[in-house]
Length: 193
Image 1 (cartoon, rainbow, N blue to C red):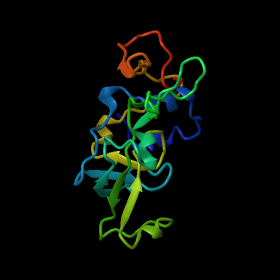
Image 2: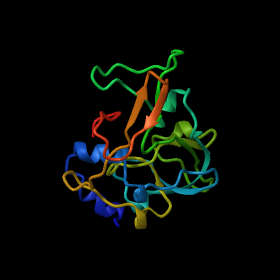
Image 3: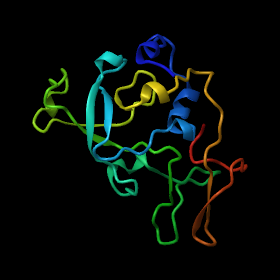
Image 4: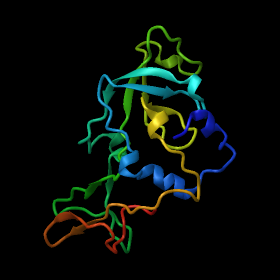
């Protein structure tokens, strides 16, 4: 796998669309487990911080995986759209047709350890020593990293991203139901790859 110092060497390589799409839908074996309260994680406070600049932190709160109503629900679910017009689909009772994202991005609250000073720019967190953040998925991005990221987090550069398909869904207005389609189905997907 890769260290963050090795990742830093790629800083001048622009992000590619394939890299950004892959960060939203990684291979199953590359996804860390959903964080739980009490988990130890690493926190990258600044862009392109390297291994020695990470902060060891504990998860004190995590987004409910069934959240569909908060402002942050778009990290977990997406509004299914009609494949020819792009119009949002709605059930017969007017509720939006929501389907899970293939690789959800929950927020987590991390607690700054008492023995660590708050980094410059994060002083607003001083009162409760809590930091809200998301997983660091793109090269150099701030956020939390799994405890074992050095062994489990591969480095994918534009043009060298593994190919795999997205989960496809279809809404049937006749039955007012959403169905998940088998892999490889020739249908419009919830967002472009």
